[in-house]
Image (cartoon, rainbow, N blue to C red):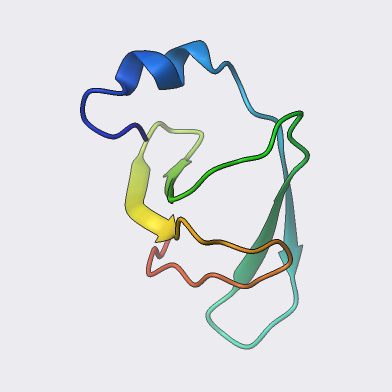
Length: 79
């Protein structure tokens, strides 16, 4: 999700490859997302989940600008 006025910059960034893995945890369920970028990433980051049927949910700025690798960030999305 791009911030207002930065949509073209995001479109030109290309596609980011993510890895997804479900992990065993207490209800509700959880997931681990991983990305191996070629360049350092700068937050904040928003999350958009899209189902195979095309439905989607968005949470803006769920990962803050001062994010750290190997850190848990909790989203309120229930997909």
